Length: 581
Image 1 (tube, one colour):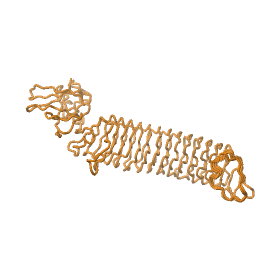
Image 2: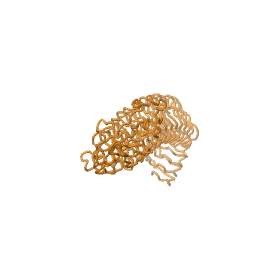
Image 3: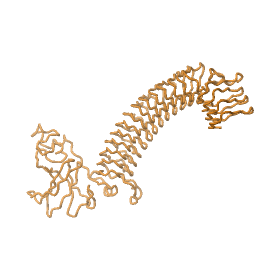
Image 4: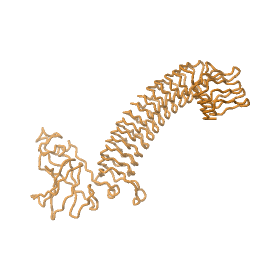
């Protein structure tokens, strides 16, 4: 008869001995029912949601009352028991076992506060479920167990006083208690069951016992008013979705012995501004911090050898991430959608960068990839739509691109840098494997030469002796428009306004294209020089040092190192690049 919403009257035969679970679930028009004397069993939730029932009498022969058999009967004001029944008792309309050791069912229409009877040791599963008129509950010493969903949906419950004797609280026990503001759990509780306080939208604070070791799945999911929480030192695991959608959570203190953070644990905690992940953590689940928009920086500890997909996805306020040495890979979408990300530190232990790892990181301008322990693999669309990414600097050999495995010739699919038009791949001179990368990725490859350190460079000049008051990085003693720091980067003299760039010829196959995708002609070759982004440079050549010097072109540098394509003179010649005035 489940969901027979029009059923208003029902006569049960005297021969009936059992009513199964959910038999009359949500029969909202059923206002009265007489249970036969020979009935022995009522299954779980048999009459749940029968919102028109006013009173029920437990017959003489009943011995088994299923959990939540009369839950959410919103007009039920009292449950009576036949005086001859040896198994159950009713006290003020509340159903108990005959010994008064277990509270079985609280009538949902019974309003106000409730003080539990002395001697009760257990509250049955679903006993108060849907009691929306219950405002406060005082649970007395001696109580040891609160069952699953015991107070679920008690939307008017403002406070619950739990005695120190409580050892076990079941799953969803206080779920959807929207008016509950604060609660303190006794020291005997060592684990928070699944969904324990889920959807408690008014909960602002909670006292957790020192012996707590586990925060279960969805324990605080959708607790949108929860501002802060400090996890006890004994906690080693935080379950899946434990703080999912806690949009008001500003901070959380992790214990030093925490080992595992589950899937989606802090997803959409949009106010969470800072986290410190302890070194003890060895596992972080899928999407654990995704959508934490206020998070600005993260350091991932060294014990983590792997991350899960989408760990920090859509953390739009995240500007800096540091991955410690030991991490083996950056998984699918790990930082996708982190639109404010500007800095990421990737260790040499990383062996793979998976699809969409940095997708839509539009503020990311450069990435440095250290010498990997083994060949690095970059998957398709790993850096897709990073619109402002200008440089990826490789310390080691060229990476393997998705599809390189058994037969590179058959590789198909989107390149790792699709939608990232400004990317230039910088490599160390002397490293291997770069001959085919430019064609396979669609991005230019350029040698990477480190700029000198200012203090070291200063020792090679006469600045300190000849210009002691103009030897700072921002000074310009020769007045040529380049300060000392820029002169260092460009390789020019800080005391000679007519000095030229130091050019470094780098032999490369003529069939490779340069940065602007144009191949070298038969009468051209290329040199490299350090440059200042935004400055203009004149390319000059001459057959002898006396000149005349010919201006071939004036170009504006966009990077700290530029490739200059020079004409080949008919005889032995000289070349120079000067700052254009």
